[in-house]
Length: 171
Image (tube, rainbow, N blue to C red):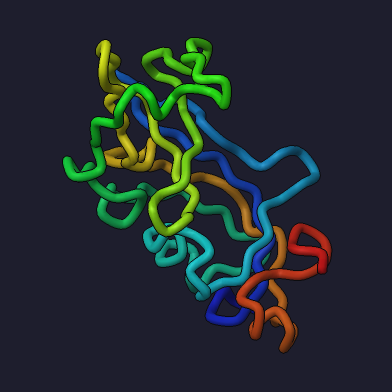
Protein backbone atom coordinates (compact mmCIF):
# COMPACT_ATOMS: atom_id res chain seq x y z
CA UNK A 1 0.00 0.00 0.00
CA UNK A 2 1.38 3.43 -0.90
CA UNK A 3 1.15 6.74 0.93
CA UNK A 4 -1.76 8.75 -0.44
CA UNK A 5 -4.68 10.78 0.89
CA UNK A 6 -6.55 9.15 3.80
CA UNK A 7 -3.77 6.71 4.66
CA UNK A 8 -2.30 6.38 8.16
CA UNK A 9 1.47 6.45 7.96
CA UNK A 10 3.88 5.22 10.61
CA UNK A 11 7.52 6.23 10.10
CA UNK A 12 10.84 6.86 11.73
CA UNK A 13 12.52 10.18 11.04
CA UNK A 14 15.45 12.44 11.77
CA UNK A 15 15.28 16.17 11.15
CA UNK A 16 18.48 18.16 10.70
CA UNK A 17 19.09 21.85 10.03
CA UNK A 18 22.31 23.63 9.14
CA UNK A 19 24.25 25.46 11.82
CA UNK A 20 26.34 28.60 11.26
CA UNK A 21 29.27 26.43 10.07
CA UNK A 22 26.93 24.92 7.41
CA UNK A 23 27.03 21.50 9.14
CA UNK A 24 23.81 19.53 9.60
CA UNK A 25 22.73 19.30 13.26
CA UNK A 26 20.09 16.85 14.48
CA UNK A 27 17.19 18.82 15.99
CA UNK A 28 14.44 16.22 16.23
CA UNK A 29 13.83 12.51 15.68
CA UNK A 30 11.38 9.75 16.42
CA UNK A 31 12.24 7.81 19.54
CA UNK A 32 13.30 4.16 19.32
CA UNK A 33 10.16 2.04 19.12
CA UNK A 34 7.88 5.10 18.87
CA UNK A 35 7.49 6.08 15.22
CA UNK A 36 5.70 9.20 14.04
CA UNK A 37 2.11 8.30 13.08
CA UNK A 38 -0.02 10.70 11.04
CA UNK A 39 -2.99 10.89 8.68
CA UNK A 40 -1.67 11.77 5.24
CA UNK A 41 -3.29 14.58 3.27
CA UNK A 42 -5.00 16.37 6.15
CA UNK A 43 -2.49 19.15 6.77
CA UNK A 44 -0.99 17.58 9.87
CA UNK A 45 2.59 17.97 8.60
CA UNK A 46 4.37 20.62 6.55
CA UNK A 47 3.59 20.68 2.82
CA UNK A 48 7.13 19.82 1.69
CA UNK A 49 7.28 16.76 3.92
CA UNK A 50 3.98 15.34 2.69
CA UNK A 51 4.89 16.05 -0.94
CA UNK A 52 8.16 14.12 -0.58
CA UNK A 53 6.70 10.99 1.08
CA UNK A 54 3.70 10.67 -1.23
CA UNK A 55 3.80 7.36 -3.09
CA UNK A 56 6.26 5.67 -0.70
CA UNK A 57 5.40 2.33 0.91
CA UNK A 58 6.35 0.30 4.00
CA UNK A 59 10.07 -0.46 4.03
CA UNK A 60 11.03 2.51 1.84
CA UNK A 61 13.81 4.76 3.08
CA UNK A 62 13.71 8.47 2.38
CA UNK A 63 16.25 11.29 2.35
CA UNK A 64 15.14 14.73 1.18
CA UNK A 65 15.40 18.45 1.88
CA UNK A 66 12.52 20.89 2.26
CA UNK A 67 12.86 24.59 1.42
CA UNK A 68 11.70 27.24 3.92
CA UNK A 69 8.77 28.03 1.62
CA UNK A 70 7.49 24.44 1.88
CA UNK A 71 8.59 24.09 5.50
CA UNK A 72 8.00 26.59 8.27
CA UNK A 73 8.03 29.63 6.01
CA UNK A 74 10.20 32.67 5.69
CA UNK A 75 10.48 35.27 8.42
CA UNK A 76 7.88 38.01 8.37
CA UNK A 77 8.96 41.32 9.90
CA UNK A 78 5.33 41.90 10.99
CA UNK A 79 5.75 38.96 13.40
CA UNK A 80 8.40 40.86 15.38
CA UNK A 81 6.61 43.12 17.83
CA UNK A 82 7.44 45.37 20.74
CA UNK A 83 5.35 44.60 23.81
CA UNK A 84 5.15 46.84 26.87
CA UNK A 85 7.40 45.47 29.60
CA UNK A 86 4.38 45.60 31.91
CA UNK A 87 3.04 42.58 29.96
CA UNK A 88 5.65 40.60 31.90
CA UNK A 89 4.48 41.46 35.40
CA UNK A 90 2.88 38.85 37.64
CA UNK A 91 -0.47 39.26 39.44
CA UNK A 92 1.34 41.16 42.24
CA UNK A 93 2.87 43.63 39.76
CA UNK A 94 6.37 42.18 40.08
CA UNK A 95 8.50 41.93 36.91
CA UNK A 96 9.03 38.26 35.92
CA UNK A 97 12.79 38.55 35.61
CA UNK A 98 13.28 34.79 35.28
CA UNK A 99 11.40 34.93 31.95
CA UNK A 100 12.96 38.16 30.71
CA UNK A 101 16.07 36.65 29.17
CA UNK A 102 17.03 37.10 25.53
CA UNK A 103 16.40 33.83 23.69
CA UNK A 104 13.64 32.62 26.03
CA UNK A 105 10.58 31.11 24.34
CA UNK A 106 7.44 32.52 25.94
CA UNK A 107 3.97 31.01 25.36
CA UNK A 108 1.34 33.73 24.94
CA UNK A 109 -2.17 34.26 23.56
CA UNK A 110 -3.08 36.74 20.83
CA UNK A 111 -6.17 38.97 20.81
CA UNK A 112 -8.34 36.09 19.52
CA UNK A 113 -7.10 33.69 22.21
CA UNK A 114 -4.86 31.67 19.86
CA UNK A 115 -1.75 30.22 21.49
CA UNK A 116 1.56 31.60 20.14
CA UNK A 117 5.14 31.21 21.20
CA UNK A 118 7.46 34.17 20.93
CA UNK A 119 11.20 34.36 21.36
CA UNK A 120 12.57 37.31 23.34
CA UNK A 121 14.95 39.17 21.01
CA UNK A 122 15.57 42.31 23.05
CA UNK A 123 14.68 44.06 26.28
CA UNK A 124 14.61 47.77 27.10
CA UNK A 125 13.41 49.56 30.21
CA UNK A 126 9.95 49.94 28.64
CA UNK A 127 9.56 47.19 26.01
CA UNK A 128 10.28 43.57 25.19
CA UNK A 129 10.99 42.74 21.54
CA UNK A 130 9.28 39.44 20.68
CA UNK A 131 9.66 37.37 17.52
CA UNK A 132 6.57 35.26 16.79
CA UNK A 133 7.94 33.70 13.60
CA UNK A 134 8.30 29.91 13.78
CA UNK A 135 11.74 29.06 15.24
CA UNK A 136 12.54 27.10 12.06
CA UNK A 137 11.45 29.86 9.67
CA UNK A 138 14.09 30.48 6.98
CA UNK A 139 15.60 27.03 7.59
CA UNK A 140 16.16 24.35 4.98
CA UNK A 141 15.09 21.06 6.58
CA UNK A 142 16.80 17.71 5.93
CA UNK A 143 14.69 14.64 6.66
CA UNK A 144 15.78 11.00 6.64
CA UNK A 145 13.96 7.90 7.82
CA UNK A 146 12.00 4.79 6.98
CA UNK A 147 8.33 4.12 6.32
CA UNK A 148 7.27 1.53 8.92
CA UNK A 149 3.69 0.93 7.78
CA UNK A 150 0.83 2.36 5.73
CA UNK A 151 -2.83 1.48 6.32
CA UNK A 152 -6.22 2.85 5.32
CA UNK A 153 -7.64 5.39 7.77
CA UNK A 154 -10.89 4.58 9.52
CA UNK A 155 -13.97 6.69 8.73
CA UNK A 156 -13.65 8.30 12.20
CA UNK A 157 -10.01 9.21 11.59
CA UNK A 158 -10.91 10.79 8.25
CA UNK A 159 -13.83 12.69 9.81
CA UNK A 160 -11.68 13.96 12.69
CA UNK A 161 -8.62 14.65 10.53
CA UNK A 162 -6.16 12.74 12.74
CA UNK A 163 -5.08 9.25 13.74
CA UNK A 164 -6.77 7.43 16.63
CA UNK A 165 -5.20 4.69 18.77
CA UNK A 166 -1.47 3.86 18.88
CA UNK A 167 0.55 6.95 18.02
CA UNK A 168 -2.58 9.06 17.63
CA UNK A 169 -5.26 10.78 19.66
CA UNK A 170 -7.19 8.86 22.30
CA UNK A 171 -10.73 10.17 22.74
